[in-house]
Amino acid sequence: MLCLTGLAVFGQQEPELTVDHAACVYLGPQAERFRQGGLQAAREYRFSQQTARVAAMLPVTRASGTVEAVEPKGTIDRFLSEAWRAAGAVPAARTSDFEFIRRVSLDLTGRIPSALRVQQFVADVNPLKRDALVDELLASEAFADKWSMYLGDLLKNTLRTTQVVRYAEGRNAFHQYIRNAVAQNVPFDRLATELITSTGENSYEKGDLNWVVGGFVTGGPIQDIWDQQAVNTAETFLGLSHLNCLMCHDGRRHLDTLSLWGKSATRLQAYQMSAFFSQTELGRVRAGDAATPYYWNVRENTARARTDYALNTTTGNRPPRTRVAGLTTVTPEYAFNGGKPAQGENRRIALARLLTGDFQFARAAVNRIWKEFMTKAFVEPVDQFDLARLDADAPPAEPWTLQPNQPQLLKALAQDFIDMKYDLRKLMRTIVLSDAYGLSSRYEGTWNPAWEDLYARKLVRRLWAEEVHDAVVLSSQVPQRYNVASFGQVSWAMQLPDVVNMPGGAATSWLDSFIRGNRDTEDRRADGSVLQVLNLMNDSFVMSRTKATGAADTGSLLRRALTNASEDQLISVLWINVLSRYPNDAEKAAALAHLRSGNRQQKAEDLLWALYNKVDFIFNY
Picture 1 (cartoon, helix red, strand yellow):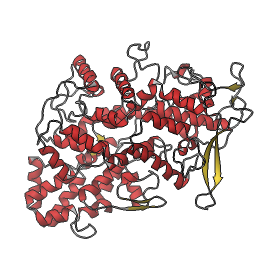
Picture 2 (picture 1 turned 180 degrees about the vertical axis):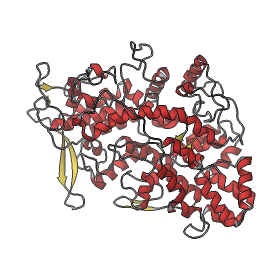
Picture 3 (picture 1 turned 45 degrees about the horizontal axis):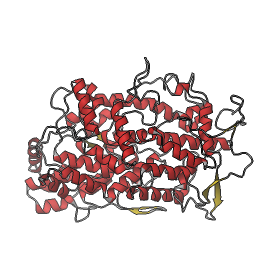
Picture 4 (picture 1 turned 90 degrees about the horizontal axis):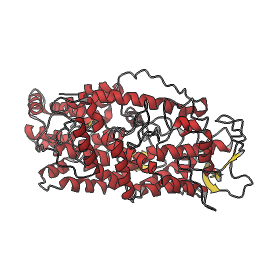
């Protein structure tokens, strides 16, 4: 049996890394994010060397037959097919139906498919069955669960950060707002607009207020808050985290080796972005409850004598703000095209209008979503775009190179996203029904690592913490319910409103071992660790589900399989439920030998435990 030894290749020591731009002391906990950006680039290189090793461990399954890739049928395949021809790359074969249904189910809903759904899908002779499956998944409640979790990460919805406390009521209201937006398929430009412009009196009742509240900063003048709100906006919706650097100093001599755009950008431009928030006020209102002392309101104040961004501070979280080019105050101006509010236009409404009308808004969104389905983004890290290195028709002068690995495809896919009116489901559907997404992760021949940037094979990814948890629950058919304080009962980890101290007790540390981040200073990561291996091998959450008697429900997979199945059937039932496929010949022979070597129940329990510890259980491939 192949256990999780393959996971260890992702748990190696971090590579040495030197970054010319020393972390600014003024950024506090956020300074680490810039160092981590460089580390992620190193991790991506290491990942590219190891992907083939993990894929090689996976069993070759051709139960539903393999067909060659068809002619390009859309933007993605048109551009990648041309890239393959130009590079002389030979793409991998098309993945099997067994692999496809597991892959797309996890990617769209965060859950493995049921055994019955796998069997139905594989037996279906409809040539458009993959299209129908994708539409089914996109319309599911599980889709809303997964992408609410994703947006919760992106929008940093958590109870408490290093700077701001939303309390459980605020966090829950924000979570409900996000989930409603996903379930109703709110266009991404509208979602961004609502969050940037939100105004209201109670963050416990109006969930979208909590996005602006997330920009609150303690210990300094109000300009620090406006700066953070502008930084959050640029990083989240434009993929431009280097704006945070510019809030402290000009890019020159600081971003010279990191960003061609950034090295010429100025602190004045950053001030102008912050000025879009200079009429925004955050207030805390006493709630009269010891557990939740206050909620937040967000208001516009245009009646103040000074409503522009003043350059008059000497304390706080940023260096002193002093006169620039003769200016003592700064008015709003969009740093990337010079746009300004119209006469009488609300400043945040103007910012949302300019931002969602910026091509970079679509490009950054496409880049993030592409990473979720294809494992590697066009631009890595996803929040460190260099605006001067994106256009293949106007490449930068040497020694700079284009930043995206597929600049023309990124541009075309961003335009498609605009044309589809920022519909995230349509974008996802476009990606998962492309031939490139449907390629096998294995490669029968000599693989050239340079072809990874061409997406000539499917890159494997380690499952999210919540996906591993829910795969164990679903496949074992032993339900799990958590009563989450101040939130309610959930049946799936993917339904949790937060990643911090959720759901409570031992389950929290089990999920945390899969590095789900904290929605503040630590991002979700796909690294492996020894603790993950130990939790899958020994933790009671898994072990109790590998027993046919005891804590497991009477309707558990193993108990029913032992009662009603022959040896061959028992093996097939375990494989199709846990791995979404049937065993290959070698696996079946080994499993039969093991079942016949002693007590049938004990040996069946061993088999189920082994499946939870196979490398292909914890990876989507």
